[in-house]
Image 1 (tube, rainbow, N blue to C red):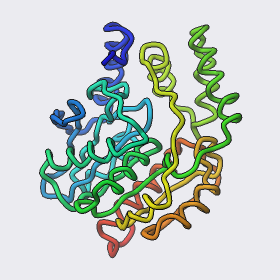
Image 2: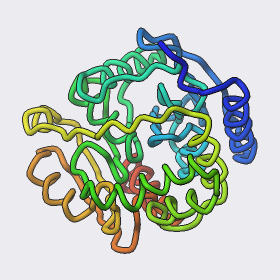
Image 3: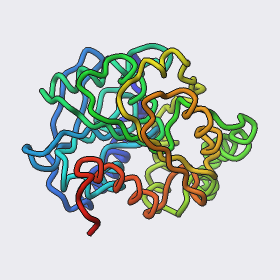
Length: 293
């Protein structure tokens, strides 16, 4: 299989930024590697071993340190396993799985088995939501609850809007290397500017072979096979996975949908306030009777 990083030098530039973000977290993370049948998988572990386990899954073109930065307080109540998704610009294997079959579900269940954990909470953003839904549809016995922020796999936005506002700026950046096109792309998806995202994705676009495969949609039968409680946080101004459209379909599809929150002023990537709302949902689920601090 061909490497997804375009060069050794480009890979180093991206992983240097990965390590920079990890160092900036100022938290105690253990770096571990798991051997799965789909490829070597890197995981950042943090939090007490006596706490309930939570697997955190980042979105497309992301990495585990970014996910940990978005939800820094989860380790106060959970032992968090932040996974570097396969075939993304991070430290896991460069093995691209299909979004159309059960591969992602098998992969996460192998991770759970390798970690030796049970009654697991799953939390994921964007493409991480697709991975979680695939996991639940494949095998959900060891999953306690699932939390999805702006998840893929439930609805898609208008393809022409995505073409003109997202993919054309990316193509222009690849042609010109002018950072203004990265900033233009990110202004469509991010609720607030993220300087690290500008630098990181600028490197990723240049040095990594991204997957532009259209995101499929979960079928009714697959969705109705899921009995694990699900909570969804969606964004009204999300151009990729529109929140109102998602709310309508999710409420029809998932019999186990426990809660659905719509952020009125959020784009696809939540700001700090949106991240805190999502994090708070997860933390309160572990101890729902506790009072707010």
